[in-house]
Length: 187
Image 1 (cartoon, helix red, strand yellow):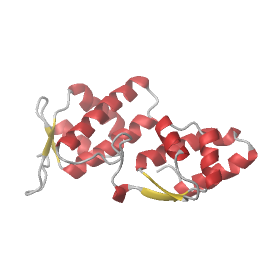
Image 2 (cartoon, rainbow, N blue to C red):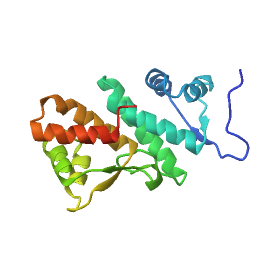
Image 3 (tube, rainbow, N blue to C red):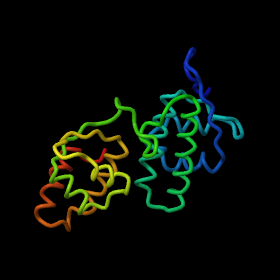
Image 4 (cartoon, rainbow, N blue to C red):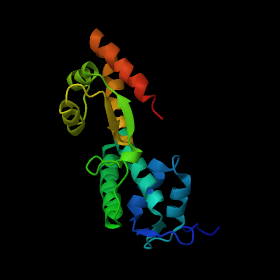
């Protein structure tokens, strides 16, 4: 079966992957993006894998989310390393990665969520958020109710709320349940 190449007129971005990276992607992302993983596996070792910008963006998103959800420390380190390389590859081609914490998501890819001041206070006090997200929530001016979150930030919020919800005190629990309902269930 011939491997699919990007359509004519679409610029291919080559991505060099080691055997370890190929195995990690196949193990961790096989069920999410089987077409991309199949292309990675079909490309001969030592040759860069051709991707379009959109495909690299999707791959970067899945690597970022999987690094948050993976339970094995070894895999998390490998996924973080791979994520940084994907962001660097995208930035070399004049683009920014979709869900990156350090890069930020483009405005069109962010999701607006209504968060009242009391809900933000509960998130800051009770939920175990990553420091960058905690600081961002703390610096929001009073009266601001709608915030834009990247897919990665929404996954971090969802995960932090789900962890702390069973043992949160009553006023915080009710607020966090409301936030969780608004950001939706884990996809």
